[in-house]
Amino acid sequence: MTNVNSAPRAPERADDAAEACDCAPTPDERRRLWAPLSRRGALVAGVLGVASLGALAAFNGSSRAAAITYNPEDYPTWDDVERARRNEADKASEISRIESHIAQLKNAVAEAQAAAEKAADEYYEAQQAYYEAAYRADELQSQADEQAKQATKAAGAAAKVASQLSRSSGDSTPYELLFAESADDADELLSKLGRLDKLAQRNESIYAEAVAARDSAQHLTNQAKEARKERDRLQQVAQEKMAAAQEAQRVAEQVLADQEDHLITLEQQLAALEDNSDKKLADYKEGEKRRKAYEEEQRRKEEERRRKEEERRRKEEERRRKEEEERRRREEENNNGGGGGSPAPPPPPPPPSPSNGWVRPSSGGRTSGYGWRVSQCGPSYCSSSFHAGVDLAAGCGAPIFAAHSGTVEYAGYNGGYGNYIRINHGGGIGTGYAHIVDGGIVVGYGQYVNAGDVIAYEGNTGNSFGCHLHFEVYVNGPTVNPIDFMANRGIWV
Image 1 (tube, rainbow, N blue to C red):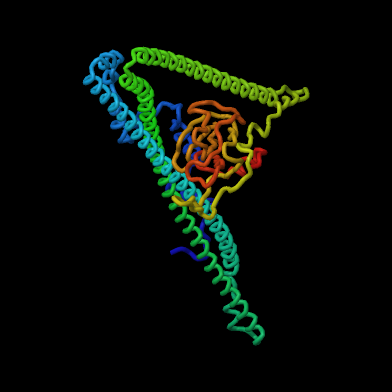
Image 2 (cartoon, helix red, strand yellow; image 1 turned 90 degrees about the horizontal axis):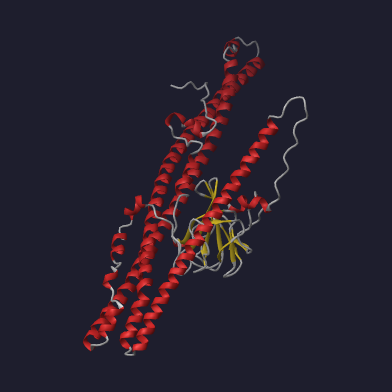
């Protein structure tokens, strides 16, 4: 049985209380959360990254969608068309064949795009579930830490009272009461005994409070540990959903490319069959030849643009590396300056940059802040009660700017976010931009952007009640308050 006069040892933090059972998070646990999600590809409208092939089995529809692409030998050639024009029966058969191909191409694109949208919606839901789980884990740990502080405080008070009782343990008051010479002496001694009794009762109460706080801290720490396990599980689910969405989008883009490659030719062949003019047939064939030459030129230009962009990004990274090396060299010179002489003067400050390289992502005013709020409902959905970003409204079609330099790791449709961009700024920091207008994304996956670059245009896509930018900031994985984060960098949002 625990001695009522000995105060319990309370931990400074709930982490300490759980150290023996490995319940508490390690210091870099949250930093590790960021790395896997920051290596994502993108659901890109027009520009795709390479999907992670190791997780493609998560998308069950991909094999079916891929199977609806066609062998070029299935399509009619211009020689087939020219032969069919000489015979009405052959012409009717060829027209039917071409119309069937056109219908199949259009259906294939619709099915693949629907599958990609479904996969993106599932990723969005998994992403939100992960953010909510991360928030719950943090909240539970915060409560556990607070209870640990209460336990420490109560334990200190119990120890103080126990010390007072210990000093009074040799008191002869009960015996003095038996031999009291007067009633006044007896009353005084009885009062003293009453005070000692109350002190003992108070000690029991404080001790019970300390034990309760300690047990509560341990219980909350255990809950936080389980919440972190659930958070990590949901993080893995989000990664798998992301890989599935990537593959679904890749398949959709492939099917769309098949359609673009063949649909124009098929429609021209169909028109040629329905027109008996030899000149029209020659014109169609010449037009097809020019179209292919134009597409080849555009492909070459796109490859050159990507090559130049990669070279520019490489040079930018090299410049930053050299600046960092120079900064460290100057620090070492200052720290290792020889004795006897005056210390070396500090290096000149770097050229001023606006707010440490951070800029406001929109010119619009704030219409909704970060945190808990009353849920808003429209005809088909309700907004979440926890708002994970800030809303800035500058008007439909207003430009959206990169808040800081970094690499685009996501650019495309993303469920309730609508059209969405995510930029990785390094050091565990990222920013997100949601509800972009259809066709308004002007950057692609893997592209390096500078602070202030126009990356998109404001819209009303996804779960939105009007044109605005929903701006989020991520630190080591989950979202943080963009208002505070940007204010610390001299930016008001």
